[in-house]
Picture: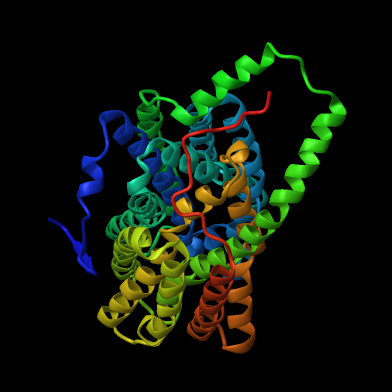
Length: 445
């Protein structure tokens, strides 16, 4: 047995949820997990070579951070585009198209001749990145058994930090290789990282070709075909129904967008410039930065699994609130330590809490989403919140340059304090739909 959680006589083996799955469900989950992992892997590769990209195009860290902003800012476009495709054409084929697109734009980034072209490819990559989470979460949550949703929600979300972990490992190994081959450094080496980043998507694409469609979407498609034989409702009736749905769910959508703004601010505020913090503030080498970052991502992976599982017992909101508040006491170890070992411990604990709270999000948002727009509603709310937080890296870098002579530690510490409290308060004031029925989808006629 890996881990057991004991509370009031309740016990849950973290291996047990896997035993609940049949072969079909395992393939679906693996494909969705790997898709999100590789999406994040491609995104985080840039965070480990911001300095190299800046050296190639003769730009400052603040300017290069705009590439992170445009990637994040374009994700809502992808959530709407691919989410709408998933509602109409199915989760599986949409996810295949989505993965093919972000792989192509990642590869194109490696061959950008000038900065504006690089920025364009990162924006287009952001569109593709924005579609993966909502479609993948819908396919996974509609396929997996209800009693294990919390565990698999945590594991699915940690595909994001697994991608970060792989990016850290690849960047560190590549840094060692470049240091061996080019002791004086090689400014264009980052291009090969983007080539490497585009290749694993072929594996996920192949796996998805053997995955079955969501049973909930298939049942919804059959009902839609049956309705086509019936008299169509008038345009006025459809308009009234659409207005009614908008009034009913508009408030929930705005709330979830605010919640996702807080969550994305916390996640990106603790991740996007952390490698730059270790390089600049702590004067670490890239391989050592990679090692410290990998320890932090291991904490994130464990935190997502533990908190996702606990949410089945404690509830979605309570688990998120506890994890978000516990991130605050981790600030001194995470931002103010001076040795690699202590910083790694701080990174492990910080990411355990931050990504532990995040581990509840896939199931929490999917359960709150209306059945008719389950692939669009959570994804768009997530990515709009992400859009509101998309200048986080640029803002942190600018604030550090203006107030702290370029030191990032004070800015990151304030970010966790303020945003951790915001996540806890907004979550506690919001709704919860733990155990909602995800077995049906209402497709438009």
